[in-house]
Amino acid sequence: GENVEQHPSTLSVQEGDSAVIKCTYSDSASNYFPWYKQELGKRPQLIIDIRSNVGEKKDQRIAVTLNKTAKHFSLHITETQPEDSAVYFCAASGGSQGNLIFGKGTKLSVKP
Amino acid sequence: DAGVIQSPRHEVTEMGQEVTLRCKPISGHDYLFWYRQTMMRGLELLIYFNNNVPIDDSGMPEDRFSAKMPNASFSTLKIQPSEPRDSAVYFCASSWWSASSGNTIYFGEGSWLTVV
Image (cartoon, rainbow over all chains, first blue to last red; front, side, top):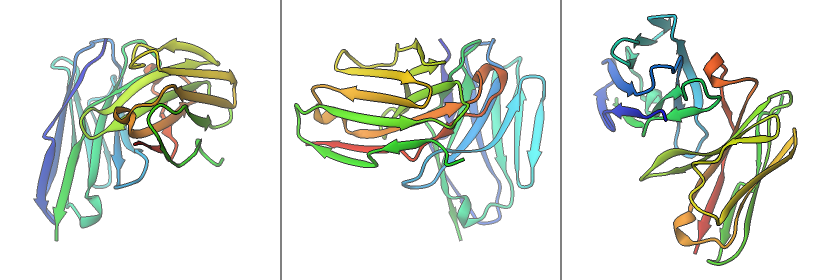
């Protein structure tokens, strides 16, 4: 089955700096890659996603890139703000399955 | 829409007791998922349903865990008997169609289970 690896597990940046989180997946049939943000004590919420027919997608300060050949995808947050502090999860669709397999998460801390 | 609704939000129970977690998916969503979240293991998929039928239960840890979906608007996750290592946040989630078709999965607020 699908396996998703996520790095780093923790990331600390200064306000205004950029943050990058990277994920790799194992199943070449996977074709949907969402990113979720989870604030302390809250539910994971979708912040951006990318499909396999697209190499990059941007939404204001957030961007995702996908390299299908290398089977990795990344989340880029620019001009980080304290409210970006949270745990971020990458996920991949389980090949041709209906489910999502999640990475272990990255705890991002943005210092004012 | 009210989103995915879970109950109870918090439960503290004694080891050996039966625990039942409940979920109402978003109306019209054909897929329902149960995930478990712990610090050590992250977000683990336990089981998911398509049109009320269990598709993959390979993530269910052991026979103490069972899940049902008697109709399109209700699902339960049962633990019997409960053990302290079952303490975790259990999330129910739903999606309109398959994730492989690029459909977003929406999470409920979670059920925080503590087994003492």
